[in-house]
Image (cartoon, rainbow, N blue to C red):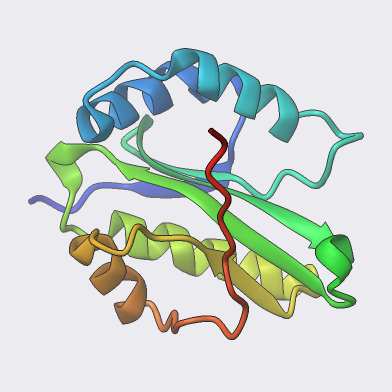
Length: 150
């Protein structure tokens, strides 16, 4: 792949279509409604600090990471963050886009005083688990609890 200009920036409302397209390839479904709601929440300054980022290559969104910062939620006294969605255009996967997005996300979190960043991975999603492991994520000492509503 020829060297292309990459720009990391904060996500904005104009990124919706690109995010939906990137996600549709990975999830095999159109989740526009989910991303519309997610962006509305992310971009609401009363909700939180916008921690979500996109990577542009030559002016086109090539990847994104969506996350939140928490200041004492869940009874955890320190500032923490979560990563809930990450996506990269299949045409540029395996070229460091996701790694660069996470690196920028972590730099932003450090500057914001965040002490830990959490994410969830399905137990059988070996590729995603391997990716996060390469990014120095380790199993958390917190337990994710689940309840099935019947």
